[in-house]
Image (cartoon, rainbow, N blue to C red; front, side):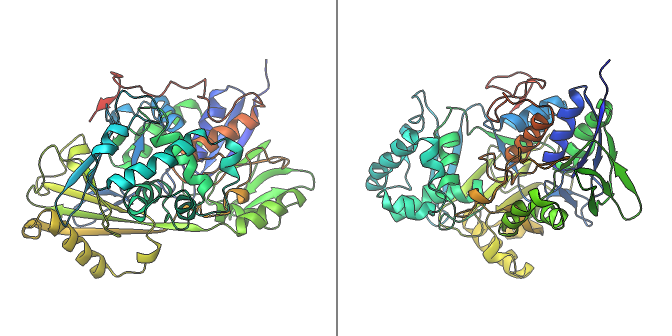
Length: 480
């Protein structure tokens, strides 16, 4: 009979959840999971609006079909009903000043040309823009991994201009996807990271950018399906339990300390954001010194979530979302009513959700300033909206995502760093992904693979022990 080993996972976000569940599922480990907050989820969370009682996500979230590992986790936790998927990539863009809307969608052409037909018809790009874009699409598709990684020191905007891109195509197309996916300005984003985004996503598999919408608030998913699955698997969860430090005995890490208690284990997986990980490693042994120094150089980027609540419906029933051309703050408008499984409430007939990506320039704006910007821009789309506007709720998250700015890739530690008794996990781990739900889950699986000595497993492969992610037409997943 195989002797079970004991592991402690610090951090109940997606990285810690994935590492804990993958190890527990292996039948080789017993897991204790520690989370400082009251509930699991980490930075993927919701708040409760005291006036309406609504659960509002800290920022509008969406996932994509390319999020293989995240969707495997959702499948493993029987939470498929909480996500609705497009069966064809459809991305809407509207100029709020002219009212002109254009759509990007996939076709039967093979990658990287599956969106070529829609790009040729796209009204927000000139013929010159489109002609020059072909050069970059071709260059990205032929780029080797070594070439991509060597572009870490150059901003994506600089690289695009060096490759003949017009300012309009940068503002309308390239910059939008970088802003939305990397939570960073195209002026600051690492070309290595941006190139991964386009190669893996928009110009990868034809269905890669099918949008997945959350039909429940995020807290519901974590507090119900995910927590239930973890408990049923045998994981012991310690909510509201902050780990203050790690225990080092001169040879390896052997446990963790709270303010009142110590816990020992054969292995510690530290699945916390990079700033907390840095604090934990500050007085660590020699193997952690370089990691500590690199983490000290990493930055965060901010997000703001703006929620507009109305007592009358102002959009068409089939309106889901549209990106807004050349609007720096009100960047995308989502119709949460279109996404949710149930009616919001008898008093709220319309719920518009606005994610403000790379909110660093606006994070110190007053509530009044942000509300006025919302009213002004939404007024261009729906001129009478203020008549029915009941409330605007604003949620600011200063440390939302680690920054994938230039020279950031070289700072990201490997999941296979040799630290006796300790494995690092978190979306900041060097797994190619930016700070996304997929990056977090992938890092958790990388930690589990390291603990299980799965040297042959690569992080672009599915996790064999979990159900597969959905394909188009999968009857077990809801459709948008």
